[in-house]
Picture 1 (cartoon, rainbow, N blue to C red):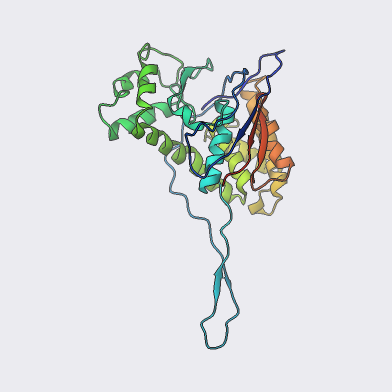
Picture 2: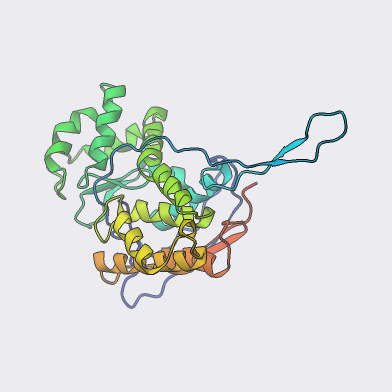
Length: 319
């Protein structure tokens, strides 16, 4: 898992405004968020789950019009409910996650990111923080090497297997970080990171949220939780958090209030964050997701304004 921000005790966060005009597809036109002095620190992740099945398309309903004389019955198709998987919303989701994970809205900069942030999980690297200590970085490189033998990371596979589950750098230093950054310049490795993000984190989150009857905001709440906590079932992983939330409030699919259920989920998630890392900054929940919820923005409709780690971000449009 990637990082959670932690503001230094007694420090006054620097608030920096960032205005972004989000597009319906990833861009590289310098449209990035604010960079502040508050550094991100730790996050927790369980081992990545197995590859989920392809996401089932959302159901469509068809309204039947009134037939006119001597003509076939007219039919109109109702609009499909909005989904976080829609191109503009998915781009927005990546920017929201990047604001918490990398203190920027330019999420594509993260492909080459790699550092040990001192959270006991070894090197944290890439698009959503694959870690050498939590198995997901290893499986990413293994799959990539199967498809692209002889890549610049392949020679580190024995060392990655040896340090898996630990924070050790043995066999990785001094060349692994440079090799990661160099490989991240290759479109094939970027595509491999995209694929793993979608298969293990994004698609399962959206699918589960849709099954629970949640709209776009709820789908993002699930996605960010899986990115931070991992897709496991223990009390501080996504599955455990969802189960605890469902004991407090019914999901919309169960006939409950969407707002009440999301309030319960965010309460449980915030507690899980502080259980994992006492004193950690929980603003990605408090002044981002809960802010959208309190505003009644269940569709995650732009413009959006939120704060993470003392930095202010704005996205005016996704069109």
